[in-house]
Length: 372
Image (cartoon, rainbow, N blue to C red; front, side, top):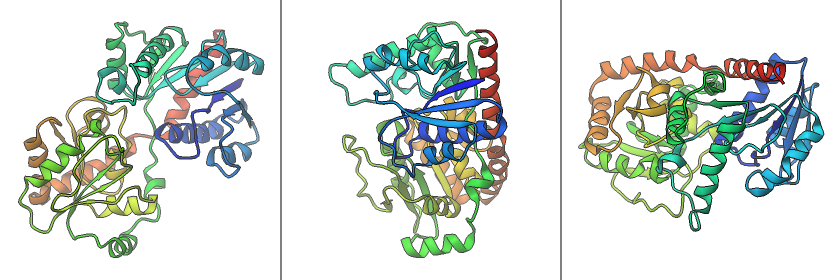
């Protein structure tokens, strides 16, 4: 079987979709040495890029540079001929705007935030919103298989487009997570080193993620401000979106910006509570990251965050500041609850595996390749 995997959406910085592609391909290569993989990449990648390095060391894989943008009219008008030229048995486009082709096609859909209006785009006259909506609907109707990363995303999108569920075409394949890999090398000594370097307090809550409206950071800060917890801090880490204004200059609130992975892991390790009541997530990797390092989690009581967290987190109404504050207060004052959530979280994060994700994806490839 010849699989054409379109990774043009991967850029030198590691986005969530880039991580999905890299880890999925790594495990596909491990479990499927008999197939041939051609990975399409964009020309901006440096030679030491992780994806290029992975392909280069895999005997049954090769990369091919494509000088075409990964979205917009060009993606629809010119990519079908490029795809056909490779003569693959299966074409996998890991996003919602898959080019239209007669090659058996798999698309992965990560996010419904555009549909429900929670995430806002820098848009001119609604052109991006129109494009994303049109491309999503086209993919849902034309792709041989659409893989959703959570049941919440699947339901949200199908409902939004007025489409009935078709189990033969629409499938849920969760993202994976490797707890042992993520926690490797992180221990008390490493935390103490980072704690000293960053002058972290003994007790702090943690938020990790972009400072965006749909991440609910303004309510998190307000909730923390309503607590009367002497000596505590709210540590925030992640990229800052310049068009979204949020007041970080509040007592006890500290913004670290983007931090390296080893610092991020240490922040999870030492935190007394990870606060993640997002208004919408397609999946929620930070929930599993926090759980794997023994950090109790507060997250949203609906959607993918609830789905991923299971019974291993405190679930709150993200629109109610007092609900978020009460959950934070409980983590600060109820050691029995903290111990229970730690134990449940350590078990829950092991329910996800990239090998399982790869096997379910490979099964999908084989299904549509057989039927072509």
